[in-house]
Length: 218
Image (cartoon, rainbow, N blue to C red; front, side, top):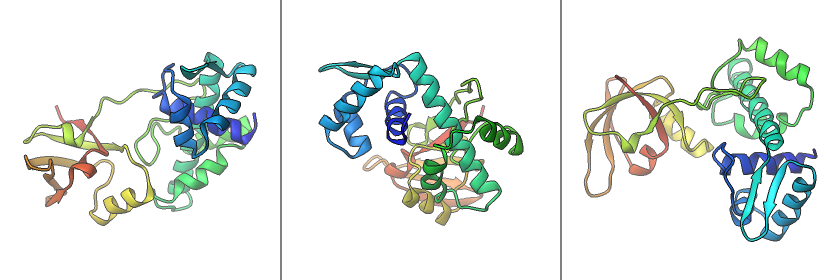
């Protein structure tokens, strides 16, 4: 696989939410910031290689083999993110672009050694699960903060938006993975929330709340 082909495979995987869902070429084009015609050419190539199934006017999905390729890329990407944060002291908003480059390294031995060095981590710095060598991972039971009723508390376990501006916002407000968040009040007008984190009361917009995943405290 070329680097470009691998990028397309991972994009289709994420757009299909990790399942064998058909996604449109327009969705892939938007994700890859390219023309739909370019996407059509690429998915035809992937189809010829047995990685994807392309149906004209319907879209594309990954084959079983394509799913394995995608999970391998996701595993490498997320392991490198852990390495960059834990071993090289990168901030969690700095690792994505670097990991995008490192995930294309082909050495299986290197990936396995990296996994072992890090102690076989289950999640990356953003709370996303890391697939095992066999492509297996546990799907966390989680809800977005803006879906949680007032008076409920939960543990921050991940982010939906892993862009640098959003992660910097969380750092500025000292919101991190593992923090307990209590929903104190919700504004009916705009959906903004009054929450408590580390004993500090803050107000956040609905947009922020819609990008934070919590595991509800039983």
